[in-house]
Image (cartoon, rainbow, N blue to C red; front, side):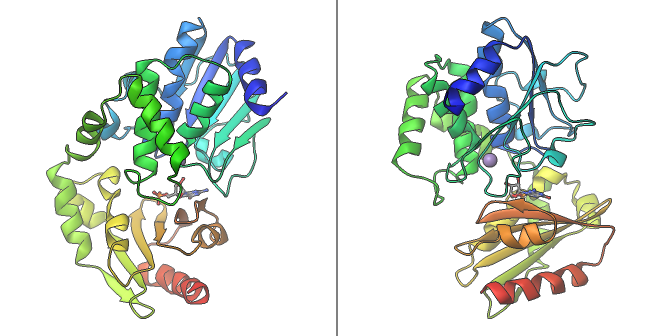
Amino acid sequence: MDLYKKIWDKIENSDNILLIAHMNPDGDALGSSLSLYPILKNMKKKVTVFNITKPLPDYLDFLPNFKKITDKMPSKIDLTVAFDCGSIDRLGLESKPSFLINIDHHISNTMYGDINLVKPGYASTSQVVYEMLKSNNVEINQDTALCLYTSLVTDTGSFQYESVNKKVFDCAADLVSKGVKPDYVSQMLFQRNRLSKLRLIAKSYETLELCCDAKVAFVEVTKEMMQITGAIKEDTDTIVNNVRSLATVEIACMLREEEDGIKISLRSKNVDVSKIAQKFGGGGHIRASGAMFKNTADFEYVKSLLKDEFKRLL
Ligand code: 5GP
Ligand code: MN
């Protein structure tokens, strides 16, 4: 039996299903995990959509059933399906589930599931979900289509990345044929910024530092900047992508001060930054990855460690 059939078979034979995505979820994490909710409800399953992070990013609040996402575990779970999560620790679970299906597209995925459906070349986890639904002849309703399409848009930087090909556009076109309005999704995702976000972006740009013949750019976000501007974590989302856009830059790195350390976000135009993230205990994709440096607030120290790696890579 192929993996798609095996997964659907398992879903059909389970009553209490947990849909879960990685902590600090993005559009793909929430979009792909919410996409199955209406389908499974129609199948009369007991469904819980779980995420450990609170509060959830409100720019995704237009996704159907967003309000159903909970950080409370149900008492009974027969099957857990993880979406868009490269390693099991990023799910925030207290113990390993009895049966876990891992659906993802991260090249760094550690294959932690009992069934692993991992497609690194795919544009989004939602593209993998779409293919699974199609191959099982499952009808895609409008709410599911909106979730899957939103995931595609957010994980491809609005259809800009290398992962975008004919199959991705065919998938998007099919989802649009189910009633998704691309301009509505764009408005919801990109035209509802908070003032605090723009103020934080302005502050972070003041810290911009170029090195390695201006091929590397560092940008910093401190707790103080967050406090002064009233910004929240999700307000930092676009900073590193914008910094990568500089003509000379090959690798952009954002360092964000957190309670328990410094979180880094890496973006490249070509080189593989997932390897660097993995070296520091993180992971991700070739051109977008991240890691956490625990128990330090020393930006210069973290930068010097990274600079050595970048020099080797460039
Ligand atoms: P971001 O920089 O937007 O947080 O993450 C970029 C990509 O790297 C995402 O696909 C995300 O899942 C992955 N990533 C970010 N931080 C970590 C981390 O600490 N561990 C792992 N395994 N992946 C991460
Ligand atoms: Mn993804």
